[in-house]
Image (cartoon, one colour):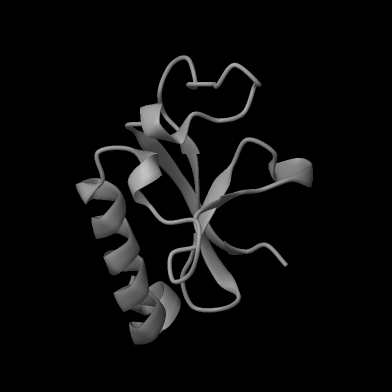
Length: 92
């Protein structure tokens, strides 16, 4: 991680990965700063991210099959118990 992203981003990335690993579900990851877990839109619809060091984010998708949904079709974060990490990216 350090070789690819440098010390500061590597430290934040390790922290975010530990948060995701320790969570019982995605509902345990706050949608407000500092993690700011949120769903992405556009060509990244279905993906989520957590903030690292601006402008970088850790991008992932729910890894439950099927993806848990609420009655209104939204993502049921309390039922997402697994995620698949896709990448670290600047989505801006």
